[in-house]
Length: 299
Ligand SMILES: Nc1nc2c(ncn2[C@@H]2O[C@H](COP(=O)(O)OP(=O)(O)OP(=O)(O)O)[C@@H](O)[C@H]2O)c(=O)[nH]1
Image (cartoon, protein in one colour):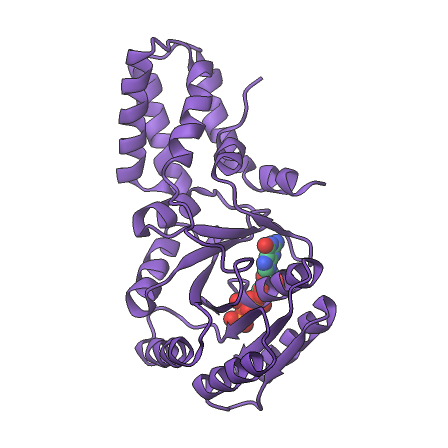
């Protein structure tokens, strides 16, 4: 199955809901617009965004005399795609670069670091992985497994070591060797835990200060989290000034709208999306491919 197909399977739930409106009668009338707005809200996009998109589309339909629902479908995909801010730079290919991965437990940080390390190797970039999750012994082991899989060295310290000083060491070692790409995994934490968020702010501060390569702080977010994902992202952004997002588990039962809500509301680009658990299941984000998978391509 191609990566785009995995995404389409993952977004099936949202697409089916949207398909229903398009198939209902075919005529664009007041009910159609109301159903569209409701469906977008139900798909986790948030009420404000759903209203804005529906209003714009309604104007366009009037202007261009689009009277059949099918004509609206691609206009909807285009309009939704326009909500995603574009990345000014790609921290995984514009090297040298140092990237810190943050997020709640189980979001997919370690898996994503492994996948990206594999991609970097394939692209002929030199890469090291930093293990700043010294909280759990199992986390260090898991990262080492991913490092072996990707053929990339993992630099870490013993369990309980100060994560900020691990980052300092990793960046220093990488700079001595003129490594292109440094990927640092951090311990998962709840956005509501202020002590752990302060610790993370220190990790970010030390890394930004020590690294001569640009540092990007990337929030890894599980697409199946639903509306709570927006609160999470807001808290991480307030504490750390995020640079962008990686949205995982879009092959699962995600509705997908949450990716749009976060990216659009916080003005954060999506660098990659995760569409499975293996090394190859990572995709460069393309806004229009994503929104077309979300709204379907018609008959
Ligand atoms: N289906 C699917 N599963 C994923 C994806 N990314 C990660 N996972 C799975 O999600 C689970 C958690 O992934 P991890 O990479 O361990 O998450 P983490 O954020 O490092 O977790 P902590 O170390 O607890 O902070 C694992 O079972 C992964 O295989 C994805 O894109 N799709």
